[in-house]
Amino acid sequence: MKNKIKQLREQYGLTQAKLGEKVNVSRQAINAIETEKFDPSIWLAYDLAKLFNMSIEDIFDFEGSERK
Image 1 (cartoon, rainbow, N blue to C red):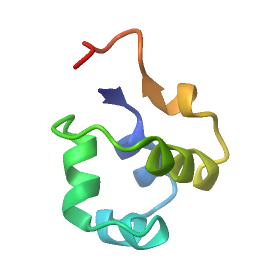
Image 2 (tube, one colour):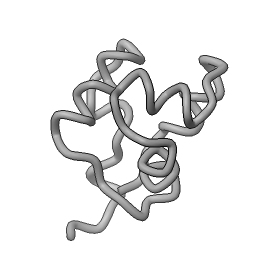
Image 3 (cartoon, rainbow, N blue to C red):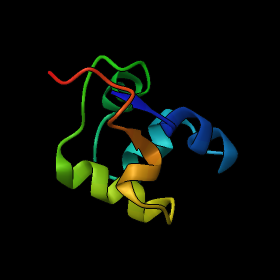
Image 4 (cartoon, rainbow, N blue to C red):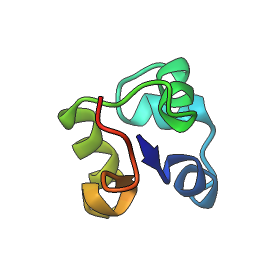
């Protein structure tokens, strides 16, 4: 799913590992989300949105992504 995770992470000055720590997932999970190889659970999407003070829809592009 298309998303703004990498852009937001860099804007906040976070590494993939640091972002992963903040939302309790591995660096590899963050990388997989950024590269659109993995779609996060609704709870992880919620945690990311809360961390960046945005809505889930502002971070993840549902309409521009192919439904799996």
